[in-house]
Amino acid sequence: MTESDPNDPVAVALELERLRGTLEAGFARVDGSLALLVQRSDQTDKQLADHEARLDALERTRWPLASIAALTASAGVLIAVWELAAR
Image (cartoon, rainbow, N blue to C red; front, top):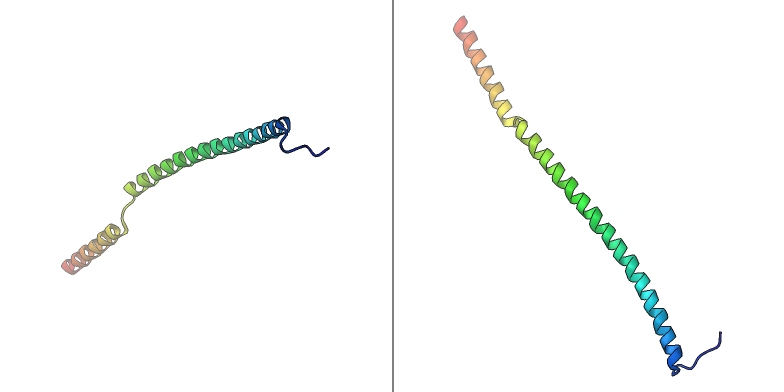
């Protein structure tokens, strides 16, 4: 390859066209990667919303530990009072 004159308009035009092609290919790769990331982000958002809904449903159906402790203590007091009254 021979060294061309930097002032040669044909050489400059060819080099600019080569740079343009390189930039277009690079932008196409970046655009594709960004589209994939957006798709994965959307899928992650859907999974997160699904997990939140499932967790909310589980939290609504479970008994709080404090309520179970209060019921157990009340049952113990009632049994103790009933045994004392039965003697």
